[in-house]
Length: 588
Image (cartoon, rainbow, N blue to C red; front, side, top):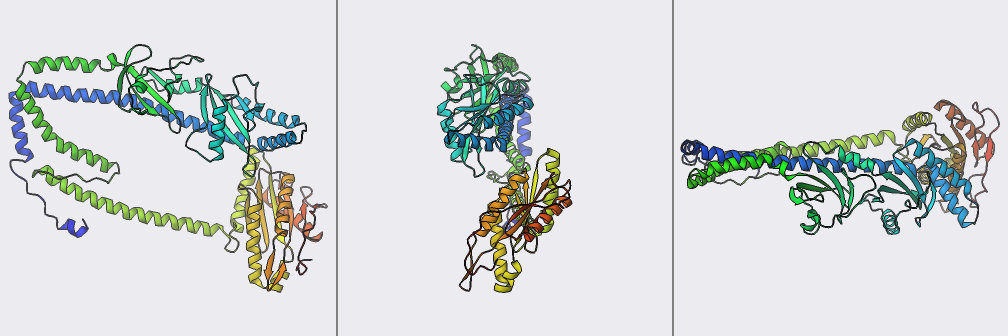
């Protein structure tokens, strides 16, 4: 229905007999005759409903909150382990161990480096009982603490984990509860994303038990964690080291296809007590959180109210009671339906369309309500479209403001902001920071010989090569003209030299064809770093620029490391074997 149809809509005429006023009058007469019947019955039904809803809400809140806090806690632990496994100490030394084993050499020094790192992490993060580094077969290599016989993880679970990690699957947490401990595993990858091994953390279940205990408030007696087979994993009333199977649990025995209801169920628990409980699944895990309370205490008020109401109802006329109940239900039903849909609209759900029936004021109000929802829905769609267009425009403008139009790299302004931020972070975290300043050799000769358009092509392909030659965490920008700046966070000057040599070799392998003539280009690179060459970005860039000048003066096509904080001494030159070039190469 469009706007024109809404404006021309003919609303229903209200019937006098079906008006709310007439229904209230009839109901008042019946209530006067049988006040005890009507009020007593309605009071019992409403109070019983509220009490049951209270029990349901309390149980559901306990399970949902416990599940949510456990999920958040697991994500924090997984994030911690991902940070540990991403350390270059782990990846580089593990790669060295693998290489030593393949070459039948001694890798003890690398194991010592990893063990010292894991021990320092374990001393700082006391939550982890042990950190275990394993190879791809699941055999422990190094641990931050003594490896007990219970530490190695089950082979079938490790195999499933490797298949999920290699396949990029993220639908389940790589976590398992076994032998009264929680195990979390993260893959250790090399710089080329190849898997080197697995890093496992062992955590005592008391940490999860404390999370569950904090949710046992009010009348909640117990909260526990089950797996899909009904095995008890953690409970607020079970001491550490005590696990048992719940093979006859009502949540499993009475369910269909492992359906876990959110509505409370009544059953006899493992302590042979009648309880009311509910369960909810833990996100991304095959676990279920169960909360329960004793049935007698939970329903005590309902039982007392039912006895009083039953005594009252049995003394009154049954037929009038039934008639009053049905009449009241028909009166309140449409209003409740309208108020319920209005609550949905108030919460932001505009997918509402209430059927119109009858000729009462409620029918008229329902029709007006439907028209109002249609208008709100259209206005929200327009507003959403406008906001989306504005966000896309802002993102595009931001990208334009930080990007060099020719190369697609960061422009000078933004790359200078990045080096300032990375220097502050390196100084704060006591990490290294390296800078590569490189320049295309004889670039003016390329422009003069082949034209500026070819020069632009050379710049663009060089930018692609630079991006492909560095890590994802590194930053590449155009510093000005044919000069480029590469920022290498968490990198020593020695590692930066290796990166610079890789860039120099990759650039030398580029081939260009213009007018049936092949040519290639080379670059000269100056290397400087924090804190070796200064405490501020100005001095670091100055040293990198001085090293670049030395590379140019020393014959180009080479990498030069800045020497000393003042960078006035002779630079150290790091050449690679010469790159073979075509006979008509413009560079000499």
